[in-house]
Image (cartoon, rainbow, N blue to C red; front, side):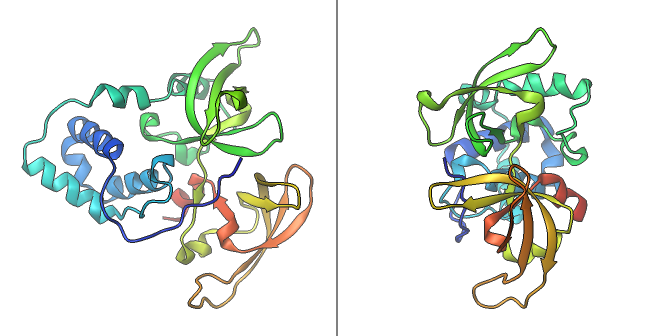
Length: 253
């Protein structure tokens, strides 16, 4: 299973599912959709969506321009039934779980509209994090915990798993632009792409040291010493191998 960060290209338009989502938001939030922070947050969510893998990055100005154009055109139709299908069943589970205090949900994530978010889940097979494609079902355990039946992006039914929501489901980690390296601090929880001879996986890690370097035509050249949580091994990596937690972005703005 591979969660390599998306490559950024020149923007060339929204996908059909993104348009459906934005139509829904325009109907629900109306004038609020034109606010800068609203558009910036939506742009980040769209850019980390599995549906934009391999496609150009979205700029918040492009999001606002779309809202302005369609608001002027008097767009007021309801979202399609496909939008309802895209909203994961885990929305209910996560909302319920927040009431009992989920330590995995960062403060910056609590006020997000869950229907807009993408999720990642930690596999029971290898302890690595993978993008969630679909939440197939959910169930309540006698312990009070909630489990969801997940299908991972790029994998078939044979890889489906029942995952504990409290411990192993969270809002998807975000790949950083080269100019955003300053947002990664010592002590931060990150998700790092660990490359080994027999496997390549994304694992939780903590930043131990940051070595600032001058950027060049290749982008960020800084080095980050990280320690993997699952095996305590340490490694120096470039920014391109790191994905940060959404609360790091929220706290740095």
